[in-house]
Image 1 (cartoon, rainbow, N blue to C red):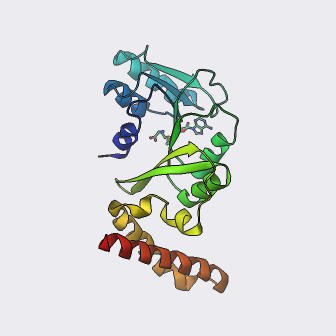
Image 2 (image 1 turned 135 degrees about the vertical axis):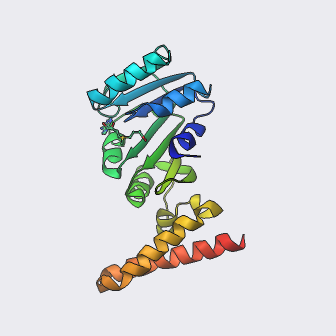
Image 3 (image 1 turned 30 degrees about the vertical axis):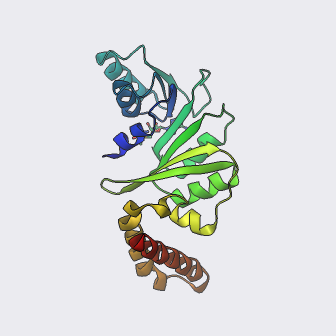
Amino acid sequence: MNRIDSIVELLKGANTVLDIGTDHGLVLIKAIQRGYIKKGIGSDINHAPLNETKKHIAELGLTDKITLIQSDGFENIKEPYDVVVVTGMGYKMMKHILSKPHQTPNYYVFSPHHELEELRVYLSHHGYEIIDEDIVYEKKPYILLKVIKHYKQLTQEDIILGPILKTKKEAIPYYESKLKAKLDYVNHVDLNDRKVVEEAINYYKAAIKNLLVT
Ligand SMILES: C[S@@+](CC[C@H](N)C(=O)[O-])C[C@H]1O[C@@H](n2cnc3c(N)ncnc32)[C@H](O)[C@@H]1O
């Protein structure tokens, strides 16, 4: 299954999904077409993608099911929603979006394109709990996080491995590639940074070993 389809699978049974940074709108379009959700709100900070997506939605006859709103994060969103999706952008943009006041959904689906560990730290410090994690391999691996608003502090091990991902065998190739990158890198860093890299190496090695025997 590809990244978009895997995101869509996490929306089954939702009523109204708010997709922030909707761009092509494919998450909402597929979720509606499969009958997984009743209504979609697609928001994007940029006008151009919204215009294209509006035409596509009209061609598909889904205009009454998907509302498009130009908005910086939650800023112009007044309608109720029960699930929030923020995917396909970096941690800094996600942090900017999440730091603004908003109505708490039943759950969030996050998938950063990079800086996953930084996102886990942010969630851990700001009262979010990761309740599930999936991995999808396309050109590169993508991690999908299902998150609720609930305080749950993560350990350093869980920030690096993922609190749920570390229990899933599908993560082995991802951990192996992270381990290889850290092993290539460890001798090129100074003594202070080396401790951090060595700690990560030990976490990856232990996680791979655990997953291979379970
Ligand atoms: C790479 S696309 C990701 C599209 C889609 N969510 C996905 O996962 O494939 C990122 C989109 O986020 C939008 N974006 C960036 N910052 C935003 C913000 N603060 N509020 C809403 N949309 C934003 C961009 O305009 C762009 O269309």
